[in-house]
Image 1: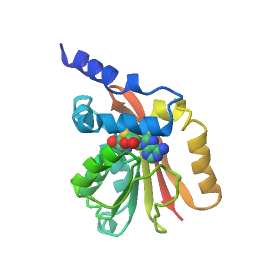
Image 2: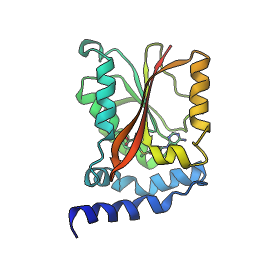
Image 3: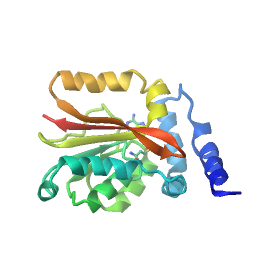
Image 4: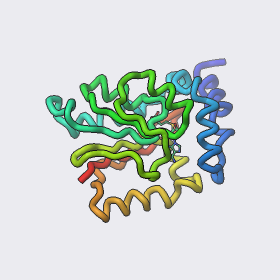
Length: 191
Ligand SMILES: C[S@@+](CC[C@H](N)C(=O)[O-])C[C@H]1O[C@@H](n2cnc3c(N)ncnc32)[C@H](O)[C@@H]1O
């Protein structure tokens, strides 16, 4: 099997088949619990460039000498790849929000996160101080097609912006999130 076929094989059998548009949040988290131990390995095989792009965008917003002060919340943090890239760039106040226990256990081992919230986005326990940043990096297709996210998630984030909770600094698609598919990256600054 050449490298390309191997990649396709991994992506097809690994996660795509397990997630359908109507999947419930609990079932979705069950999928991540199931695949968590293979996640980082697959990300490497699939040339997943999203976390480094997210960290680069945040680094562009914060001068080097301020990176130890600004607080960053990594939402849907998975195994903590975004945090690891941020840490390499000098950030030391990184928190994580991740509902899957399996993913969270791997994330904790990275040692780069301070506060860890094992919860779903919008459930309200995580806090970010004024001036802090919130980063959300996920697969574009899931954002657009899963019933739990499409319309609802961006509406929720827009409402927070309209009520001056935060300001959107970055919204961009990220090429090659996995196996040539795009990701979506949001970065918000808390007001
Ligand atoms: C693709 S994975 C990890 C993405 C991570 N940002 C990265 O770059 O590696 C997506 C993560 O989103 C989490 N997730 C799914 N639904 C969520 C929700 N409603 N709120 C917060 N996190 C969620 C999953 O548990 C999973 O770990």
